[in-house]
Image 1 (tube, rainbow, N blue to C red):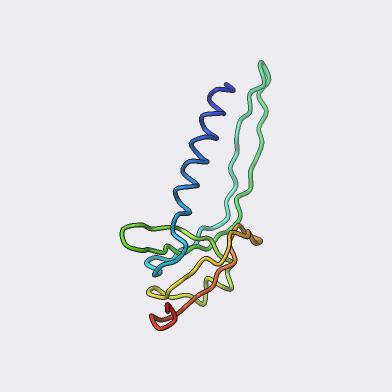
Image 2: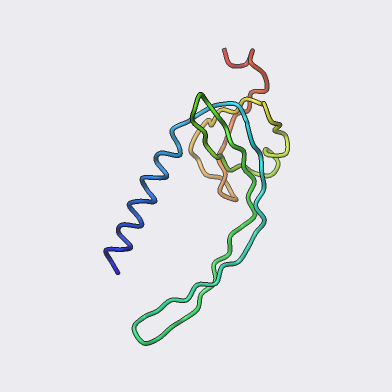
Length: 113
């Protein structure tokens, strides 16, 4: 069981590090995920317990640069100001409430220089 958990954590870290390779790009998709609750059984030997995990509502955009894409989670207020085709630069990896990032948005190609 411990070997499975170690492998799962390693895979998650590898996928997360690959996902964050793009720091800026054009917004090519925009979406919203509703909140939801997940029920998980946990077995501890002969006893099975049930726990619930709450997943909060999330707002995201997909940015693209060349052939690469990246999903960036944002606060609702920031997300609602963005449009497809806008340029987005991820200013930092500081997580904010709701799982988003602090971002700087540039709306046209003149801002890229």
